[in-house]
Image (cartoon, rainbow, N blue to C red):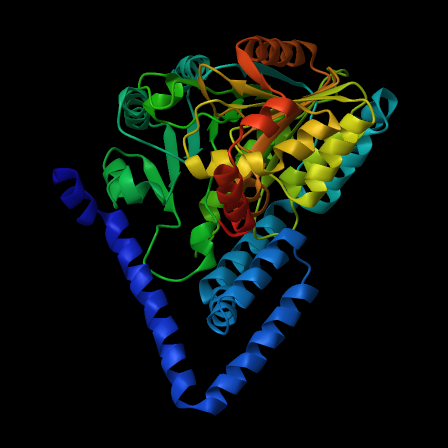
Length: 515
């Protein structure tokens, strides 16, 4: 009973209640007006047809179109009105405008040097395509003269992050999706407070969804009292707006412009197995040093300044990166740190994944906690398997969300029939977001294999080409994980997966593009 009362008086319950009241008020208001005035009903029906036609003709992923059309048909009149309210939201337009402004401002720092491109052309002409796209159309430069270390667990990443934070002399930039009280965050916070006291510039940014259940609503003000410059991205408020569905899912730490971290590891105890939630928590991260750090600095500043109303001198950090770049020394390894921005209408993370899948000749290994894909991604993965590429997927055995478990299995037969191998990590939950292809290239970051990461969230990752040690370490991690996992066969899945779970998964997957 105490838990029930705690839930009722929580911020999450209040916000959801107010949103529900708003939706119901619109629904009953529209219904009442339509019943009393036939002309209003006719106008709304015509309006619904116009909205449906506009959705069909919008430059939007087919899965999103289908979901919205089903919603409009399933909830006549109200569905179209709901879509219109969300899409015409002033806040959405403001976010898009601000991020476009930031992108243009920072674009000059995202061009790959001609010398590096010429080195890459001699190494592998096919890699020029991705580098060209990122540099010319998105604004993320390819870099050499860098080194990286792969961490196959949250514990390993945490240890290295603490060590590097203690070395900070000029600045620390951190941007994380989840922050929760406990050993991990307490340990990091103590270092941040200490460094801020020493005169190191410390900036910390976290996603507003933390304020629902994990952190106090104004926790960023508490951090400021320690001398830490703190911000929260997009606080959750009881209002209908699509921007509340666009979360900052990135995990970035940049220290003195010399080292950066990314990967799946958030700042909470389950990520380092100090607290058990879903069996053993399998995560991964990567640390990069050298010129490739520049893109992570750029990504952080883009998020930090997207709603700043006054000019500042933050470009100095990017200028420092440019000034420190030197003639190409390391001609073998290349790094490309990239970000996903849901407001730029360009699915950057998805294109990175597709580029890797389409170029594979030997194998494709994928670790992901969630597997809910659109037709294009499914077609590319299954075609890779059908043309003889070994495709292996590593998924959780213990899921954090039942809905994710059910939705992932909707397309299992399609994958298995094409020859894709599916493994479930028996010890617990896989939260790693890693793709490895042909002993040549890999990406490690925050991007899940689902609609939310490809279309709705702010994400980031590090694309690694031809760094032998990192690629070997990732391969060892995959092989070690496969060895303790259970392989799902087509026969077992057909015979043992119950029909009611298939039905539930199909319904969940139908609306997955929206949530």
